[in-house]
Image (tube, rainbow, N blue to C red; front, side, top):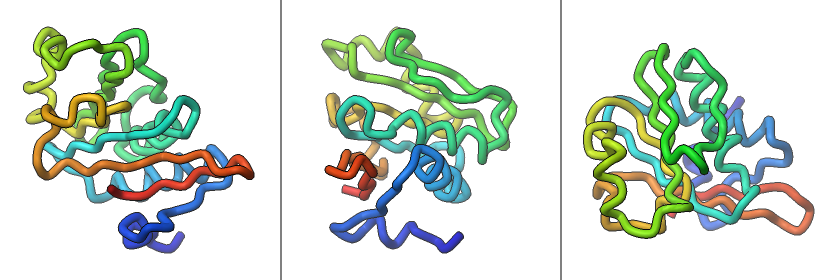
Length: 146
């Protein structure tokens, strides 16, 4: 598979035609993730954020398959080369709610992926990646770095 990371920086982004391609992009990018990496996954419901996370979790070698943390706020995936923390800010009303979820500790302890991270931009580290997920008319997904 060709390295698609440079395409994320272009306006067109990367087009993923299937959920498997979205997961594969997550797996490909996971090779660069290390302890302290933070990625905000931004886009509408069903745009592929959790599929992307599944690919990251698999590539990191995590013990379980990733699923949406919408109702739990946080899923933790151990067992890989680094710990994966998967947040979902969708149901949060205020950023202060993150204090009870150990957010700051997670940022320093592993790779942190945050669905709906744009809801509280002020809590994202300055070097966090922001990826936008967009559903196109043909049902494919466009993913690009903001």
